[in-house]
Each structure stands twice: as structure tokens, then as C-alpha cells.
Image (cartoon, rainbow, N blue to C red):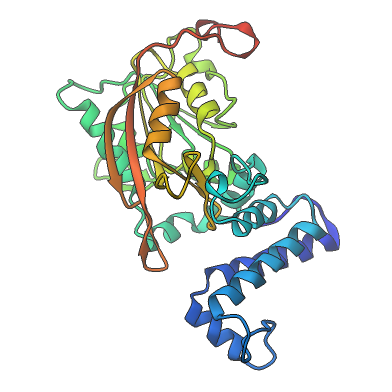
Length: 346
């Protein structure tokens, strides 16, 4: 990870970012073992010093602070420092906590991990694409054929959710992501190979009809849907974890959707005690949300709750991550978009 700037500052920033990430991922036992090694860079384990967990957390913060200082364009270091500095965003991280991950952070994060992304998620027992797919299966149950004329895979990444959507979509399936490296991997997927699918039928048509590098909060309706009523289905699998405040994103999803169109997405889960304002920034750099906050913001954007399920999106350091899955339906959307254009004019 790192900023776009060149030279020594950028190189040092990347080194410090990597060091901080390594320290943050260590268990207390591993941190203690590292600190006990001679000539290590961790100070404070002598008598009266910090316990290992605090020691590595403090050293990780210092490394991220240095990474951000030597290269101010390093969006990853800036975001992760904010996450490490406060256990909880609007729920208690202080007024300086970001309300979402910056596009620069998200793009750099997933560009860095693109080549190893699918393998790492398998190691983390990643369940979100399959569970989002099961929610779409439930929506399609009892409806003949492929009931959705179009669908948006919002934050599609390498395309892991795509096969779960394709079987229910008769027309365009559009994938959007900030990471061009992720999109290149998704572009290689066909309807029978890649993106987590090894089908027996040989269908070499591309899995996605269109892949676009866009910001989900501001993206317009793609050209191949212009003149239509909007997407019949939007799915955002493990995407809202990079947003704290959800209002702008949900409103844009509503603008991009046909009336009555369902929206399926996952979030990491917080309680009201943990997140007084409804969301919090976690030390992982992701955001967690309360059910009540999500339902309230969705209702303000024109959605009603259809189905809800608590779930485990992944396992980190042997601990199940708390998550929840929402299925919403767009009731009515009549409000004008920015600039005064109605949705039909997009």
C-alpha cells in the first residue's frame, strides 16, 4: 500500500505502513515473542513496561503516523491511523474520525490485494458472496425464468458475487469498483469459468456485460441502461463496511434503481452501546453499523426492510466477525438528483 508520490518519502512510507500493518495483526503472544528477541525495535517489555498487546498497538500507531507524515498522499496510512487511534468512529473515536474510507484508500487497498484477494478470503472463511446470493435466490423464488432485467454488482471486486447474480438476470449485469486491478480480474470471468465458478457447461460469454471504475456514491446510470427505469436489482457484498455514514450511498442506490427494486447488502454489526451514532470505525479500518441505523437511513432513502439476518462474514485471528445481511425494497423514489435532473433524465 502507499501513496502515489515517488521518491524516498513514498518508499519509506510504504515500509512504515507495512511494518504498522504487521504489528497490528500480531496476537499478544506473538508480540511478546517478538519483543523478547534481542535487537528488536519494540521497547517497553521490561519490568514495569507495557503489556504486549498495548506495546504492539502503540508501535503500530507510531509506524502508521510516520507513514502518513513522510508521504501525505498515502491514503492507506492516513485511514488506518484514524482507525487505530480510535476504537470506534462516531461511537467514540472522536470528532476527527472519517465518515467513510476515502476513494484513494479503497483503490490502493484493493489494487494491492487484487492478485491474492480470492486466496486470502478463502483463508478467512469468507461467506458474503454466497450469503448475498442466497438472499437473491430467496427474492427470485417462485418467479419464473430470470426475474431481473438488469442488476448492479456494487463494489464487485474480482467478481465473486457475480455468478450468484447472473443466474437470475436476463439482461445487463454491471460491475462497479474503484480498483482497476480488481476489475481486470473480473473481466476475465466467463459464465462458466472464473469468479469462483467452475461450471460443466461451456459458456464463454463474459460474466459481466459492463465493468466500470466509478465511485458508488456519485456514479450515474450507465449508458446501456439510459432510457430505462434503472436497475432491477442492486447487490453490495461487503461494500458498506467502507462507509460510516450510509445516507449518500443509499440515496444514490435509490436513484439508480427502478421502483420496487430490491437492494441486498452486508454490514459489520455494532450495538447501540458501541456506536451511539449508529456506526463506528473499527481498528481493522472497516466500519460497523447498528441494525437500527441502517434501517433508519434506508427508510430515509425510500427503502423498506424485506429480510434481515445476522451472519459471520469472515473469521479474523480465529474470531468470528459480527455481521448482518439486509434485503430492502425501494418503495418510491421521486426526489430530484443533484443538479435538478429527475431520475428519468439521468
